[in-house]
Image (cartoon, rainbow, N blue to C red; front, side, top):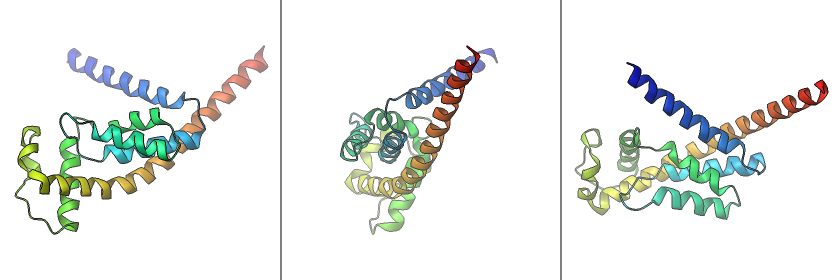
Length: 167
């Protein structure tokens, strides 16, 4: 039991570290939130082994939107090894619903080693499904990030003022 507790503590510490890294970026809240939105959008694309597609998409989008590249790279972790299967399942369902492509693939029983066996049609379905999934998630992520960044900075300013008034 103690061993699992340590793993959860490490995960909590890691999440807090990335949260604080985002909050401490020296940029406007809008730029950071746009970077997060770019990262979430990029994170919705499938992970192709050996190709950092998600990070490349996120950083390139952040470059074009003139937003935080660091926030974009960090936010791609919305898609991580713990939830890849869920993302692939949703991407596949969206892609097969919207595209007239037939692929024999069961995302519920899928493993990472099966990725190369689905072919270009399957990859097309996953990429299109990721694009469609990424747009609303990026919009939502922008407003959530903007709220939390402004809240964090407002609290930080109030703490600094309270300390200054005590002196």
